[in-house]
Image: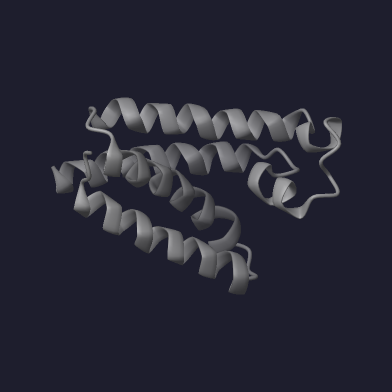
Length: 120
C-alpha cells in the first residue's frame, strides 16, 4: 500500500482545522471563504496521501468534484431527493449555490498545485 506521509499529515492537520472552523468560527470570511479553499486542499492532500499520480491530475479531479457538489446545490439536490431532514446531507452536500464558492474552489486548486511544488 502506498502512503505519502507528508500529504497524510497535512490532510489530518487541515481536517482538524476544518472541524474547528465548522464548530467555532462564525464570521464572514474564514468560515465561508477560507473553509471552501481549505476543503479543496484537504481533498487534494487526502488523495495524494494514497495515490501516486501527477499532482495536476489529482488537483483537477478534486476541482471537478467540488464543482459537481456545487452543481448539486444549484439544482437543490438535497431537497429533490428528500434528504433535507438529515443534517449530515445538508452539511456534506450543502444547500445553496454560490459563485463565490466556485471561485474559492479554484483558488484551492491553484494553492494545491503550489503546495505540491514545495512538497515534491
